[in-house]
Image (tube, rainbow, N blue to C red; front, side, top):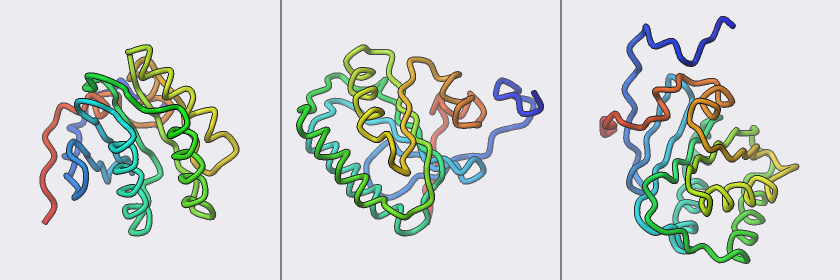
Length: 158
């Protein structure tokens, strides 16, 4: 396997912070956008990230996304709101280059929401997968596993 996601011999390029929701990293070297929402994931936060994604996608859509639910204290998204969000995302994204979107959660509730979103997005250009471990998500996204730890502090873009 020539591209080993566990090989950390090269230093990782620093991510850049983006305007929009807090805790978002962009890794241009990996064509990856990562988001780690904090606190309560509710309908309002879901809408906020949806609007922000539309803006980013119009500029230059990254091919890969990683959403890390590990810092959520509560998931309070209504099921019908998730259905509506998925429908809107599929419509807004029509005709754009397909993207891979990995959703990570060790928590069963967050993972359940991620699995539901994965099934709702089937057949759209947004290829969503839910993961319970970062290494498997890194392999699927074809990025170094360390990147998905989101431990580095992004440099703010000017």
